[in-house]
Image 1 (cartoon, rainbow, N blue to C red):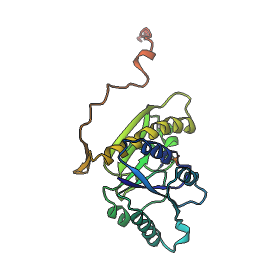
Image 2 (tube, helix red, strand yellow):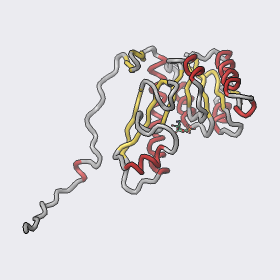
Image 3 (cartoon, rainbow, N blue to C red):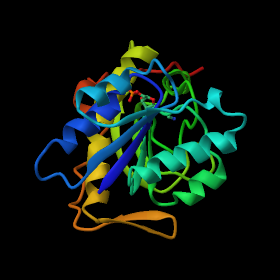
Image 4 (cartoon, rainbow, N blue to C red):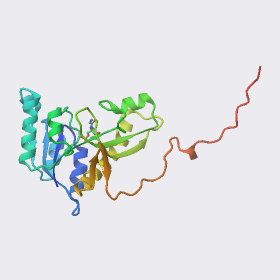
Length: 227
Ligand code: GAR
């Protein structure tokens, strides 16, 4: 399966996809990497891997429609059958999303549908949730919305700040995105009634509790004074 990747920045998820596609039995190859930012380090990653790159900056177009038309032309000309958003920080219009319906996927650094949008990790910490994670999903017109393909969970730990949590989540992003791409490229992913069904998937493991049960020592019950 030929895959186009859209990026805006450092491209560590792109790198994870490049590395995965390097395996001889991996059913996808990246045919084009497009960045909307000239300085995106991800462009160098693609070039180092011998992958075609394009800079298509929204600033060079009079309106979003012509910018998206240029994206569409580049992806189509490269033969892309699937498009992966990997840290692509431009919102895409409903027209573009519908044109690539079920052929456009995204990774987001939270357990969707919680914490859509920007500043995810700071908002997770603010909310005090015990777990966070990442989600790979098919893209729908509403932001960070669409049928979920794969998720990974990480604990939120005491003392975390947005950077430490982001790093823990990112490590799992680099596992989840190649997994989702592999499943799609192998033809095992179907969207049915806006939910994803995956053929031949084993059952996931057991329950996770945070704080871990073993880490919580038992305290004697407090005696309360009765007036
Ligand atoms: C990743 O954490 C990705 O999940 C996030 O941007 C980062 C890109 O990093 N995407 C979004 O927040 C999209 N809503 P990368 O350039 O190193 O892959």
